[in-house]
Image (cartoon, rainbow, N blue to C red; front, side, top):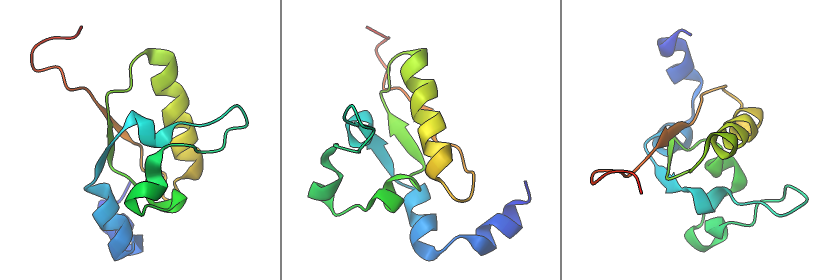
Length: 92
């Protein structure tokens, strides 16, 4: 991937969204796959959500893979989501 070309393609808002880290709750869906997380409470569009740079505290491999697959399906530039864990004092 040519990073310089990618940066030229990204809008200013997409670049800003790459700097944002959200919690896993923002990506919750219902049984039909419709996003139900609190994105509307913080003025984020679905497009903003799928341009986010990282997500915090997604637990389990299956959930992580599912989220990454949904994310990449909806991210027009193919930029993967960074999955982060807040485990400074250990996991569980």
